[in-house]
Image (cartoon, rainbow, N blue to C red; front, side):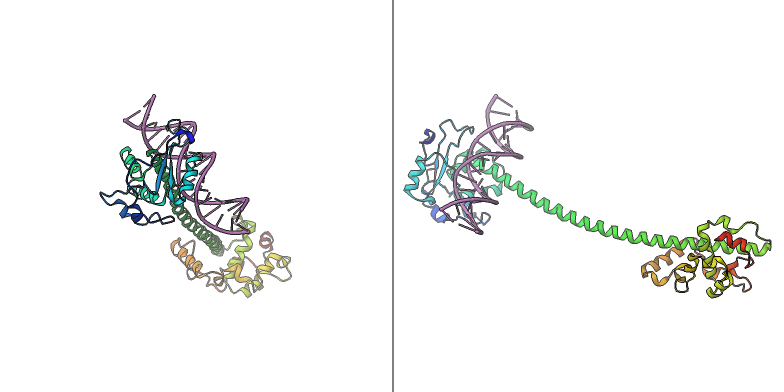
Length: 329
DNA sequence: TTGTGTTTTATTGCCTCC
DNA sequence: GGAGGCAATAAAACACAA
């Protein structure tokens, strides 16, 4: 006999006959199904007798440091032949019967920790060794913990996905707002230059003095074209073109200006093309205008362009003042 | 039947608590 | 120092497709 241990029929001593009623063959039964019948007071089922046997196979003392010191035997596995084999083979792992597992599951649901008294009691009722019960609880706790972690992982995963979606939406929103900022900044710049120019124009008109220094001192070279163009925009564009640019002038053929003055493209340059703005952008623009100081977004009607004798494209300069224009370009 | 993946039972070693 | 818990792991039992 393996390990010199004596197989015992268990400690409970109850006949298993009642178990055939309480526990029909439940192999494969769902462990979570109600098992109230297992806990009927005063009739604690014993898993001894006809269904289970316990083997004590450990010669070396059952302190857990060696091979298992007991085995269960389930008659489901076939009658006497198997029993005979079982007694003669070295100890093999035997799975607990479905009944035993269900009983343990129910007990686990009540309390997943095992006090010594309870362990002994369960072992008695199931015909198992206390250590076997303890091991089952230990493994069961491990499985439970794994399941908990899986659940928590799912929750975290959902949370992460939700946050990720929010983040991506915010990024899109941010890009959209950035684009709007760029558009608004461009408009703002144009407005500022426009205002500067009109102020200078007024000043020059009042002083009637020849311009010693071009306006350009306060306007960078790259901006001049814009500035002049913006100013021109306030007038009729066709007249602006004819007034400012002599078709014979070399400046007129400047590619940039030619392009800028293309009738079809003029709207892109001189004025924000409202048709290019989404409704949101238009709303934003209007909002910005209402929030920003008046000097940044002067209302067109507030700016006096009414002097018909004044060609704003000239800024009060003689149209043939090539000194200015040659500087400009 | 067999190979393979999964589940269950059990061991081992380490740690904590009393 | 012993008891008990846990993580890691071994190994048997089981499920299942080919």
